Image (cartoon, rainbow, N blue to C red; front, side):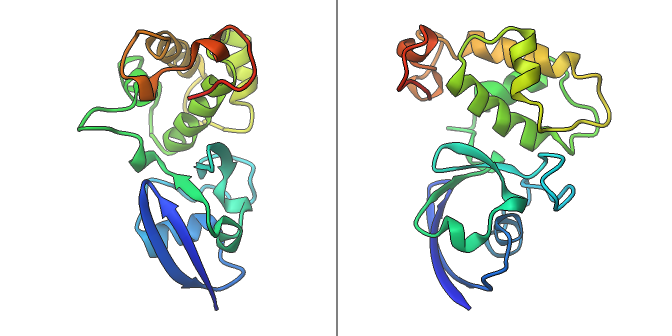
Length: 177
């Protein structure tokens, strides 16, 4: 067993894990973050996407020991003060889900996409979500939701933590959420 310390959704956890334990299983089974779903265990579907030190990763392709000392954000860590994150709200408002199985991973990837490209067109959204599969929808409402969230996250549109910086919006590197 290996001892790891990981901050998950703002809470520090120190646990013993088998070196072969995948991050997705650690999050679900030891930390209790069941919103991070196990889809394929092969990194093909993206349902298990979380943010590791601010970047989206498929948690079925990362060992828990690799996250030692890192910050992980899951779908459960997005809401603030009882309000959904703008991307979560946009998925709800735009009916961007059917069964909901892929939704946590789609939302986490969409947030990462908007950090890199705060004003994507439809094609850029589709490309940015390429590694996340939805077997129920035709993706139109998912694309619509991401574009809607981009508008709501622009400077001046809401709380600072939910805005994409004006530097990122203008294409200057170093921006993000």
